[in-house]
Length: 150
Image 1 (cartoon, rainbow, N blue to C red):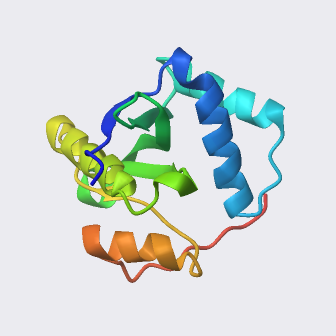
Image 2 (cartoon, one colour):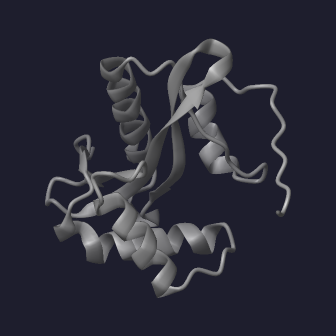
Image 3 (tube, rainbow, N blue to C red):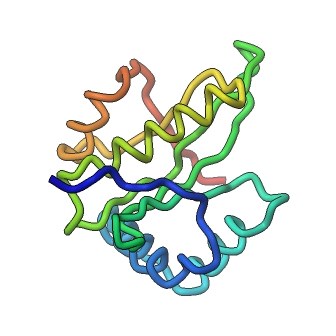
């Protein structure tokens, strides 16, 4: 059995593997993503003043095998701040090793430390494998999401 991955903040030396992981995430969701788009998101994650931050899951050899992007968000109704998990992706070769669990558990620990009231995310209805993990780790909500183009 593989040891639990080590979860660390996304750092400059992760860039090459992060690019591969993030491109895999975009491909999974059938989103056309250009190198310029990835460069913009990378710059956000590396800017201390930007709200978007990143985490990397490393295996025992120090290789990045999973990634997550997250950000705090205001929750006016509860007068609290939550953590929104925007993107989570695990290298297909590392699936089944509880890498997603480790990333989500790390975010939950961060939320406790920071006084955030919830860690929230969305996923595609047909993401059955991911939903199996999420159903183990969190409570599914009743909320339906809408998008409107400006």
